[in-house]
Every structure is written in C-alpha cells, then in structure tokens.
Amino acid sequence: EGILQHIEEIWDAMKASVKAGLNAEGILPGGLEVKRKAKSLINSQHIDETPETRENRMVCAYAFAVGEQNASGETIVTAPTCGSCGVLPGVLYHLWKSRQVSEARILRALATAGLFGNIVKTNASISGAEVGCQGEVGVACAMAAAAASQLFGGTPAQIEYAAEMGLEHHLGLTCDPVCGLVQIPCIERNAYAAARAMDANSYAMFTDGKHRVSFDKVVEVMKITGHDLPSLYK
Image 1: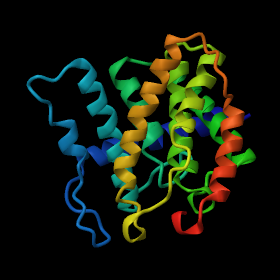
Image 2: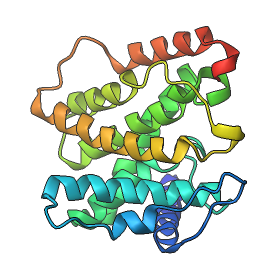
Image 3: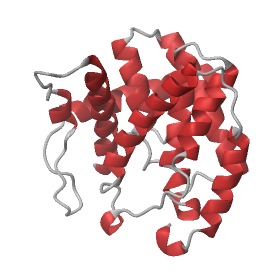
Image 4: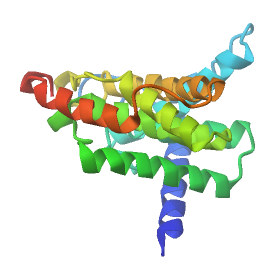
C-alpha cells in the first residue's frame, strides 16, 4: 500500500530533472570546465539523420540532461545511485515522448526496474565504492533494459534476459571519475548505458527469452568481480 504514490513521485521527479537539464546551459561547477551538452544534443539534428539515429540522440540527450543536473547539485532520482541517475529516465522519458506510452504503463515499468535494482542491492551491491561502476551504471542499464522490455510487451523471460544483458556487458567496469567529480566519464557513461539498454531490449525481443546465464547468476558474478577489483579501481 502506498507504493504507487511513491512511484508517481519518482516519475514526476525524473521528468522534472530531464526538462530542467534540457533547458540549462553553461559550465558545470567543480573546476573541470565541463560544458553542458544536453540542450545542444536535443537540438543537433543532422540533415541526413535516420529514425534510428534520432532515437539514439534523444535517449542520450535525456540521459545527459539528468546527469548534468546531478553534477550541478540539483534534484535527481537515485536509480539506483546518483552517479547512474541518467540511464533509467533517459530511456523512459524517450519512450514516453516518442511512443505515447501512458503514465500508468510507465509507472508499472518503473516498478519492474525497481524490482531488478533491489535484487542487486539485496544480493550484491549498488555501491561504486564497493564493487565499481558495474554496480552503478551496470545495474542502471539492467533496470532500464527491463523497463523497456516490459513497455514493448516482453514476456517475463524476455524482460529478465534484457536485464541480464544490461548487467552482464558492464561486468568489471571500474569507478574512475576525474578529480572525484561525477562528471567525466560519468555523464557520458550514463548516455552510453541508456543506449545499450535500448539495444538489450531489442535483442531480447528478437528471441524467446531463453538463454544460458540467468540474471541471478550475473548478479552473483558481479559481486565476486567487484570484491576482486583492487580498491584503486573503486
């Protein structure tokens, strides 16, 4: 009881962070002189742009918008962490805008994403300091892939497969922010992972969902991999 209202608040905050990030300009604080890119990405249509290229650009722009809001100390949703906050809203906002997905379906997809994130949080870790960025951006990619698969009508097996791919192909990813700021390579990495979540969904939907390595097994391997990473890379 009360979970739906909580998810609605999460979705409202995600939408607000995307919109604010797309309208903001200037240099991010911190001294690295990183220029905001979300607004230019959303407006940088090329004359020869294909529908597929445009989709990728939109997803990346939305992910950049949220990542840049985080870097500026603005309100974002930890999904599952601050450093990986752009992946899930990047995917969901794009599908909501481009495919006229209803709010009710978005909320259900968010619940699914949260389920996968909490499985990792319970059985492994979502802390970059503990397991590296695979536990942050890798898990965010898995969450976004699962949510996208559900929105595209995936079966439980296809949804689980999409999430598994989202995490599996980030195994071993280190946490290496320049000067300790969540800007380089973090913001760009969020956009890349959002695009990969869309790819994981597409591939899972091409199949019947059957595959050799389960999501639970990947979570187990991620935990072991994270603990084996030298602290220098976390």
